[in-house]
Length: 381
Image 1 (cartoon, rainbow, N blue to C red):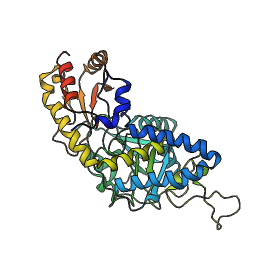
Image 2 (tube, rainbow, N blue to C red):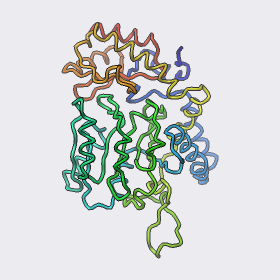
Image 3 (cartoon, one colour):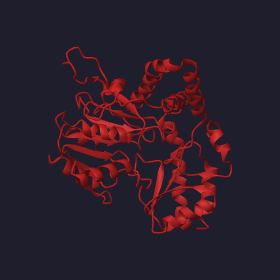
Image 4 (tube, one colour):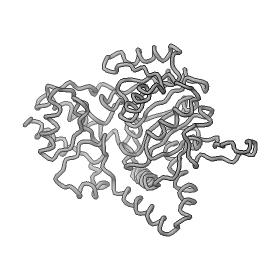
């Protein structure tokens, strides 16, 4: 079965392109175009009053989609921002620690890696990282997390470089306390790529993700699940987090009790419109994460099975098919990775490079004809 008709606008916009980077900039389905149009129409029709609709209808609908997908007990713990970096900064500002002690892996996404390195450089935090390349990463990470040496523990649910899945979130959640340590999970490469159930840990962990990748909604629809009781008063705060509390002393800054306490200021709501439109489309088509994976996993398997017979056969596959659940991309490590990406680009094939790792990612808009085309090109590498 092919789901290409759901992506006709994006595919027709560049008909000669073979886009194999759904884990990076996921192509947008046609439904997102309708969402973008609706955002503009609401702004034109409602003008100043558009915020009543955005905050009263659009925002709660998006919260509901996320709460249902992650099995959260309430949508009220979900707050949105333009990017996850904004939310990350706000979490650190809420710890109340003069110099938080942070534990992370060495394989985190750019926003955290760069920001945490700069904070460590300036002395704002102390930073310890655990190498991800070894097979016993999970055990070593848990050992350091259990040491009691940290105020904040940060780890990706799915590593963006290797595609490996961190399967010990429940073990980390057992360590979390409102007074510290806090557990923050970056779910960007997990959200809507693997089935995620936070129902047993939602009261103890922060979870960050967004719409740019597997949620297929593009930029501007990032979110945070903030557990109740963790970080009541972020120092980095915007006026959307305001709350009129009659018990406050005059001049004291108030905060919402819900996840809104982590909100910022005025934002472009178009990402939320696109997110809702895509979620509505998925529900209309009966496309749960499980059903999407039932389409995509065999394609990944076909691709992985034929790699050895191509020019890519010398690469080290960092996330083989035996790993379940799995990311929706293959991570191929080789000193030739850059040359391979250049060769693919010359053939109008979009792949993605991170250091010496070539990533090939699949989505709903792929079928076996795309795998055959890619393999044919890979034979020439």
